Image (cartoon, rainbow, N blue to C red; front, side, top):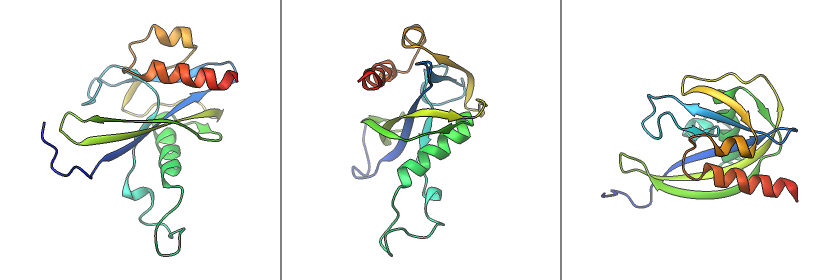
Amino acid sequence: MEIRDKELHRIATTCIIYNDEGKYLVTKRSQHKKVHPGKWTVPGGGLSTNDYIDTPQTHGNAGWYGVVEKALRREVQEEVSVEIGKVNYLLDLTFLHPDGIPVLVLSYYAPYISGEVKLDEDAVEYKWASLEEAKELDLISGIYKELEMVDMLLKV
């Protein structure tokens, strides 16, 4: 696969949302999704210039601070309609999208604060799953490992 501009990446975020019962919010992707249709995952999505371009710059005239977290919170709100607490960085990963665009995914975790889960059109089902329950789901590769990592971090 040929990559035209090796410096350009699509940037996406994911958020492992956990509740007081030690369960994680997972959603099942719609069959119409280009990447991983019908697989279970965690909320997230792409960073857009709309996340900052029409807002005052926070770093003088040199740019904007906090855009990734702002985009993550927007994606969580759009996809599952819940509020989350303090966002913590977990890891990053890269992959090539089926159309050849390199993707950088920044994965975070945060506690559930409030709101009734309401899905957008990209997901067809959701559940609050324990680690054991998540293991039985058809998760996107790597998501279970990330859930395990968060589970370990929360137990420290």
